[in-house]
Image (cartoon, rainbow, N blue to C red; front, top):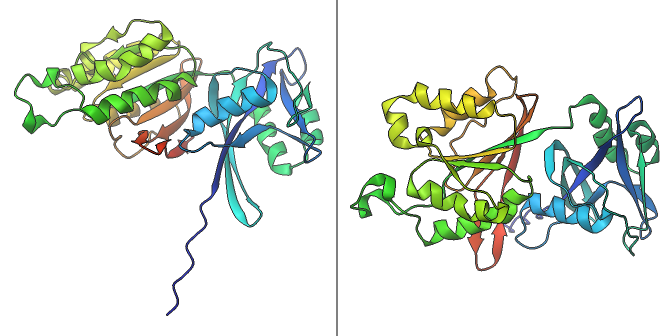
Length: 314
């Protein structure tokens, strides 16, 4: 029997529905770019580089094509289509535009800001027009609440000190470093961590890049959870009430119930599977209420680069 052909790997790409507030009936304008190579009007997007995280792809491509340096908001959707017989998958997020100047390039020679209704008529591909339609139907002005499981730590059976003092192993330190550029795509945020060494070490590189101190929260620890789960959950709800961009770094036993409590009453389903080490969930919130949830598996740190898997829950 002849061997069956191997499935062709999809081309990975990402971009953004770039928006800004406007004093019009629709309340927002979106950016549409012209690509001279194809003579078409499109949303800002592009292919992932080798080993690049999909969130980084979206931010990089938006900057390269529009000059806008953005933080990503809620997911805007995913398009799938064929290019030269090969499947292509493009993930989009909403991202608020600022006032950086647009400089024409050989790839993009024109950018216009137009109301979503006008953008739908201008965009060449109907799939892009459908993404823009949701810019009016959805709340696009959101704030992230990131729930992160700490990176890979030394095994319990090989550690003879207090469990709270158990450090990251070498792979965990590499994961911690890899997470920095990925999480920076979501913008500045307050960083809150369990008081366990493995959690603190996971977020310290990110906090350093953000120029903030890690807020230590003992109620996010396994020890506190074992004593009183409800006390830990109540503390997380209090933290959410700040209504500011926030990252919480905690441990596997807490995370399913923690995510379920954060999503409670929102109509958004918390990711069902437990997070692996260095994996995270991004909850986007509007007026203190969760409106979307998206799961990102841990960065894969290898000699060939880093990559991730992505799934959105809305």
